[in-house]
Image (tube, rainbow, N blue to C red):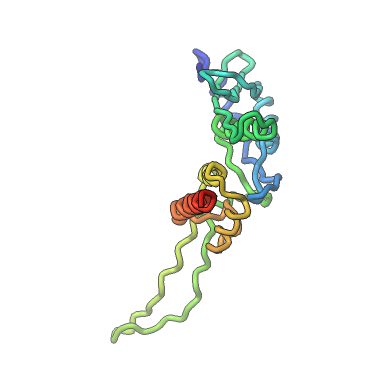
Length: 222
């Protein structure tokens, strides 16, 4: 699987120029997990900047070693190219709807991987970090020297990245846990959506999903 042409000086220059004009894919689509940037949103945010600099973005599918792949390719008018291969993973075999969903997911991942496009909310801000409000308190005396004391402000809540969000959702799907069960788990932890999972809670939530799946299997075999 060739990932790039032998020469890349022309496409590299064009990609750098185009990338400066690509600001991020707005989350215009809504699903069970809240707002997300669809494959169409990603294409819309990058296609014109790429074409303006002589680069065409294409996505085809190829079978390779018993697996199916989406090949995301940026081709410069000179013939130079860069490629990204993303495996199409299907939860259920012989299910056209699941196959299409797997291909769509691979298309999204392929564009993001090749162009490093961030996903942003509709207000133009990437809500990876949610700043906490610093409490307003009056100074209090803590010693005979009357040195004012100021409590340290709360630390900002760092949310998981888009990549970790996708991985968490895939973990839920692979575990056989329903969307409703996953939402209930998040709600119990005061989390509104998978995009607002605190980074420090990700590991615990993944383990909780695994536990739910194990409990379901035990009930099924009881």
